[in-house]
Amino acid sequence: MITSTGRRLAAAPACVALLLAACASAATPTGEGDSSAPTGSATPPTSASAPASEAAEATPAGSFTLPQEPAAEAIVVDGEALPLLEDPASDPAVGERLPGLSGTSTRGDPMEIGPGDGPMAILVVAHWCPHCQSEVALLSDHLRVNGMPEDIRVVAISTAVDETRGNYPPAQWLADAEWPVETLIDDADGTALRTLGIGAFPALVLVDGDGNVTLRVTGGLNGPTFDQGLDTLRGG
Image 1 (cartoon, rainbow, N blue to C red):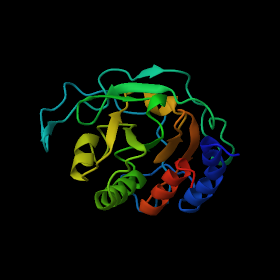
Image 2 (cartoon, rainbow, N blue to C red):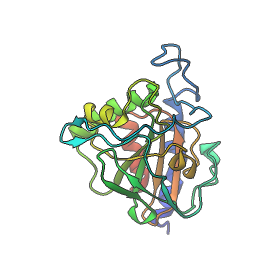
Image 3 (cartoon, rainbow, N blue to C red):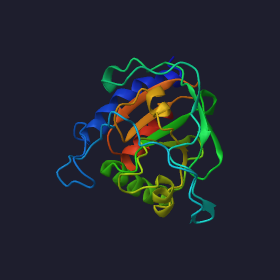
């Protein structure tokens, strides 16, 4: 008899192939919105972000005040960091317990991501990355039409925040995109990104109901590929 966790792990390779087929290899954009940058994922710069700005701007974005980005306080980590993702098809993090992350959301509220929140999908994006911008636009439309899943928690992490690059601040970008996903702001050291073992973005991390990683992959998602990723957590 195959357990629900076993079904999820068995389904993961198919999801990897699907996502990788939809994306080119990782690349670092040569400029903001550079049309020569291949579709796929972007590798973060050596310094994950620019120095933190002074006090957060008191600029309303809808019904909230923009928080400081990158996060003013370091992300709190509970647990062991995941190994760096190199090959999604043979990922050593699969089966490992998700480390907990605590900080502030792009709405300025306390936010936690942890192993007790599974099943869960974690999306990793950067405001200046054109591939992330495309993914956020596509998934915002998809989730607006189809609604957020009720059986799987969907969260995001805004990382590599750099106020010298375009589309800053991320909280305003996500608000303008009508992004419905609760999003954690990474700190200036990229602690959340490094703890998840992610070296490029956009990225997706899937976590089962036991709090264990079932899949990590980089590359842009659209509505259908996002749904198929969630289906691996449902054993489909």
